[in-house]
Amino acid sequence: MTDQQWKTLVAVVRGEAIRPLPTAFIIDSPWLPNWAGHSILDYFTDERIFLEDNLKAIRTFPEAIFMPGFWSEYGMCTEPSAFGSVSIWGENEFPFARKVLHSPSEVERLEIPDPRKHGMLPFVIKRLQHLQPEIEAAGHKIRFAVARGPLNIASFLMGTTEFLEALKTEPELMHHLLNIVTDFLVDWIAVQREAFPSIDGIFLLDDIVGFVSRRDFEIFGVPYLQRAFNADVSVKFFHNDAPSKASAPLLETVGINLLNFGMQYKLAEMKAWTNNRIALMGNIPPRDVLAEGTPADVKRSVREMLNALDDRSRLIISCGGGMPPNAPTENIKAFISTVAEETG
Image (tube, rainbow, N blue to C red; front, side):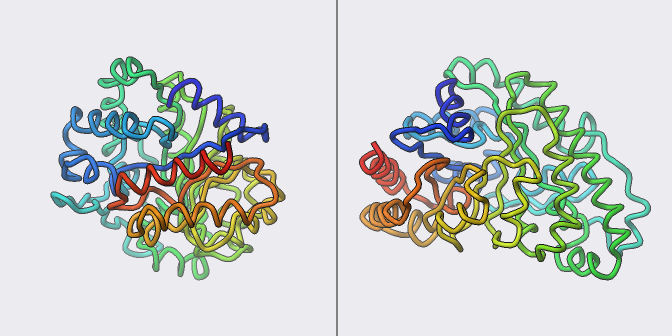
């Protein structure tokens, strides 16, 4: 992310008027390597391919902000690997982390990992350190500490169904699990900030928040997300493209000031549920329109979304979630040009 893009992002979060409205997309392994002509496994294992693919995206779409920017990740395996999860890889498949806890009682044996030494986390840091001179030579800086959220990591360690059931049957053990995961997250975020002083944002992704009730989010989500986001940074960015109506009114309490949500709701609805206190990033349908529609479909969807809004403050125009697999260049360009035409 360039200095000007970062200033724009911070201005939106503060509620300043921006014209035209900024366009941004979360980009990572489900979209970027295949779009750039490489396999997912090559993208994960070859630093040069990782760099070239990210540079290709920013040069093809210079008007867009890519979030979090040069995302050094290993899919859903990144954080679970530090807890000893076996990572499953395919040449062109999304990696998967096997669970390490086979019953709630096994939480008692879990230890807090050291993000400086455990799992794939040192590889995340080293990749960026190796490439940092070239990233900065291209006019960009590393702006975000990035991690999966506490409920998301817990669900990989236990299995999603098993974790959600245990919230009801073994609440004390689940609090113990979430405390361990959150202690680890706080340390992992600190490690990233120490390695890259240019970081001034935290980006957490946690779709499991969308599968619990408001009451359960208050009990099992809010206190742990508050701790994870408790750092002196300008942007506290949260992604949840699962249903988010129940959690939305509580996100400001967590400290979040930028939200990327799914396509289930309209921007105006989310503005109301968050009292227009949180900047929103969204939200045309990612798969059915941005990936599988025509450029005309994309233009129409963007216009309909914008025309439905009375208040365009605190907005970053995007799709509902991350950039979807197979989203073509012509559709992304149609998206960007339409936002510029309609909000300039």
